Image (cartoon, rainbow, N blue to C red; front, side, top):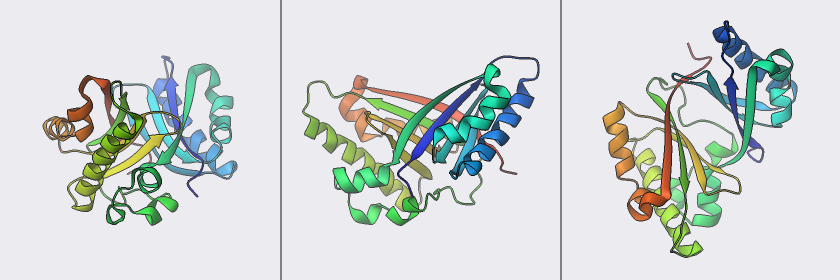
Length: 212
């Protein structure tokens, strides 16, 4: 099932034992997700911040319930509904089907698989389309998606790609060797070349939680 994906953004407030709160919050997020019948897909610690990003399939209220009881006064929670970009690409953008792995997304599996998750990044892209029609914007997003999925299919990019529900926004978890290769990747994005300053990219280095 992929109809109830949620990105949970958990920010821990400064305190003397912040590392314990981060570790405890991660455990409570998983326990709450499983207790409420959901599925924990993965969680990341944002590098340099007291912040956890978790992707779950299920009720976000249930997923965060135990964490809130244990650490509610020490944290702020924000949730966003997501959908796999594969379904958006297939149903709306008409991206070539040989680039779309719907079976993988229907099972909520990550293209990261068992690969080493070092050098992982969280990328949020927001875009506007002033001066062009809605259909022209969709064509640009389709070109961007074809570009990303093409790189993934050729084995040149490891990426999980999601669309925010009801917003011109995407969230991606990807791997890159270093900042230079990541910057070169972004500079070649069709959406960046065609929409220019109407595209805003927020990029964070992340470390997977629960991966030994």
